[in-house]
Length: 206
Image (tube, rainbow, N blue to C red; front, side, top):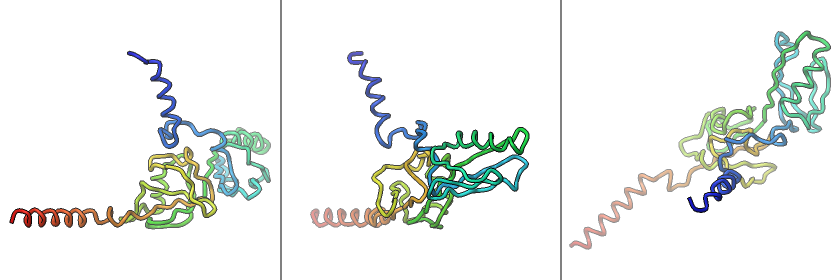
């Protein structure tokens, strides 16, 4: 095929476009790193007193049972787990540790149960909305907006986008806007247009 050498180049360009095939790509470590405002869910096998959910303060530090304060700003879930494994080996034989970094976001707008929620980065935006009871009948979950520090972020997010593959951070607001009056009343508008057209045709044929 003529110009077949363009195919791989065009394919790479399409994948690199914002909002295209995001869910098929692994988020970079910078996007997956622990940030202030996150909550670390720590699970240590057979140690319920040392397990729990621990907030990351504004300095990027978190206090874990027995091992004390940690600066986690440069950590990913994997690197933090390795650090904690090394620490807890001082107290436990062959410790089994599970780390999940949760993002603390406020879901607002046209949802049934607006409020603050802890979301796992592995879930999708649709799953996050389900934590807030889902969109109301007048909500438009296909036009989600992200608000940070009172400013809307210019980004296109689909419902099937994973939280971890999106720019959503702890402290952000996920806004589900209301659908426009026209889309909410599409049947009424269609009936009105049909009636108007019928009336015009009837008058024209008289």
